[in-house]
Image (cartoon, rainbow, N blue to C red; front, side, top):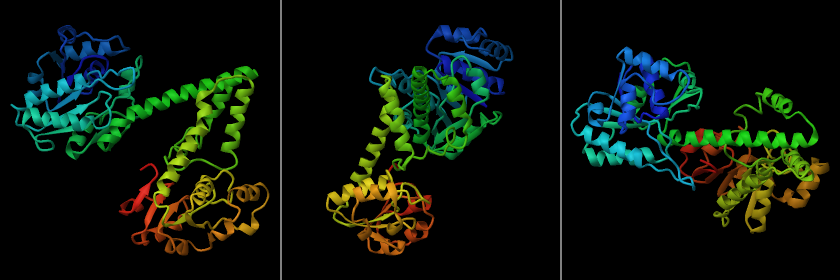
Length: 435
């Protein structure tokens, strides 16, 4: 394909060389005549492993060129990739000035172009930016989105020092668009790469860079806090984290990465508190670890707020234990929510097939007696009855028996804390805690 790349800095230069190496003809565009001259002389605009050789080879093969003329580049290509910088302020707001300036340049060129054109944004942008770019291009060009042109978000995940290797061996290739043919066209650029190509919604793609990098920062900070605790105890923290990373079922896996209800049970709250106490007693500051339970409490309060708006209606809770398949009520977020709502005078019934009040013993019984002493008067032994006698249904555990019952519950309001089943999303009265 013929591709134009706007911005010949770090991402733009790497993309220019690597796309050309994969067999495409690439035109680089930049306001800097110096950068344009460097590319046209077969020289890279950045210092990065392997890119200088790639630019030199591809220039000799006549697969790349550069220009300051945006109109010329757009008219001779079918895809324009925007790679300009989006610097952030001290408060984290992005400066999108360069993005919008490139969008204007592309729009002016599209005035004179009849062929369909795809604009892909590689720069880091906030969700909603692609729509603003499309609106600007429509206004300035007189062309119509998804008729004359389409917008695609194609975030990059390149690390300085290993950018070329990252380009050719990405964990995945992400493409967001509301135009299927445009998304497929951009996907063609990466068909030679070994990774999965994921096509998704625009705003999902736009936010992913922030999610990824914030999590990477969290991992580093978490690892350092564990290291600080271990240092005070004379423990080799690298051995600790090496073993931690060997668990691919839970520790390094998708298992816990499901936005939804707060955590509970006997282990997570107890052990987290234990680690916090250990650090406190040794005067080791661990702000990340210390904030975990605060975030959990915020999620519980979010749920209470969502449900309490229907406080004048009969509330039916499906699931009381901290997760499906257990009768453990200790630190169950559902218990905390019900306790708070009872205190606000709400009318409540509860169904949980795993809970038999007469069989509760030990700390489990002590916990529930302290939170909801008259629990037995709220419990029903039939899920359908709990649904039929309630106006608002709150799903707290992922029990499969709930799915067919909820699909036939009429116009009752459903509030889902656990994303029980995606088929329920079609219900007009359905709300999820995080979706």
